[in-house]
Length: 385
Length: 120
Image 1 (spheres, chains in turn orange, green):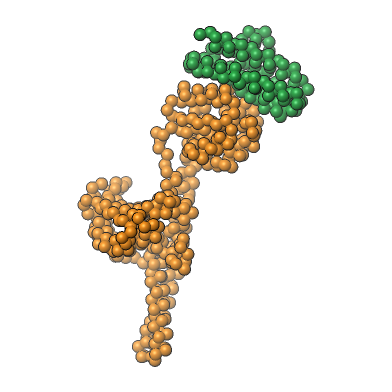
Image 2: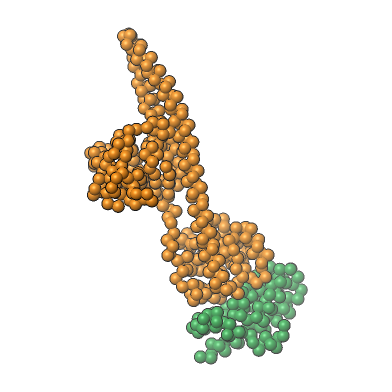
């Protein structure tokens, strides 16, 4: 199973969008010449913003998404590598191409060591070289961002696998011990104990049963508790749960169902599927203020091999921070405090999706809402892909 | 460097035009911009020299160098580079003469650009 936690802030760059360049140059004439280069020879490939000071540059960077900064190292307010470090500190993710004078190659080389992507000699810049350097700087940043995101995802998957093995192993052994506790309590209860002893034994049994329910959730996350996979229609599972969903969301939260026109056949455990849907709906409810809404959608989508069933549960609630997104599938991770929630809801869902050879993807924007997308291998004919 | 040569050609108009793809409007705009900016650049250079401030001299010469290079004004660029190097080294004992030489080149460049502006 592949885990994908994709904050929407890292949305993919559309290839056809122009490369947004910010030129920081205090010399109006040089800025004008460079702008002319972009206008005359850059076509629609680039869009250029210019700033004469660092403060102007930072104001632009705050409001506009910039792909590459072209930075003159010698500005009125700062000069040399100091200029570069200020920019790098404020915007570490935006690649910087340094503009230097004819005989400043020594500084240019130092700038490269301090994080500049490349340098250009001012005044004699060949526009082909200028555009190539900018394209390359942007490309490197995209590749770097992609590499970091892949690394992060792979790390998350490995971490969850390790946690699953550990949690599953502990839960399995713990469950055996709990069975002994429940069994012995049961045997003692059969001897018709007196009032006090019976009360204590009942309490032991109740506590052991609760503990057992918890270990079952852990077993599910650890992929040690398998279900019964049968062919079923995802639409039907959602429809059968509709009444329950409406009752937990109450009157103040709207819910919209958008189900595929034809049955969405999958091979799954119906109880686990229902558990997964309810758990996601409850999470959505907790994130939504009155007046909010939940959207539940089923559909068939194209996949490399055949087709896949996709279930989306989206809300317009408070959304999650990137920090939360990075941990949500870990057992015992909760934003509500362990006294309020066990922190097993999403890790159980993770286990269920993994058991069904599926994939779960989350996107969330703080203050705007979250969407969980679960894809599962489709069975038989696709509904209408 | 031959000053008589450079003074006769303070501006390589062909290169300037090529750089801007023959966009006369843009060339005129840049020429006007130079005429407006050049007194300020020169004043800053003079202040650096009189204040014996090597770093300021370096920066002022650097700005002029950038401008001159863009106009393909080779003689001005060379003279500015001399001053920039002085600022870098910290030895500005000959800066006053060098600044005079640069001012003369810049004046020629100004005249050439003004002539270009008048020549419709």
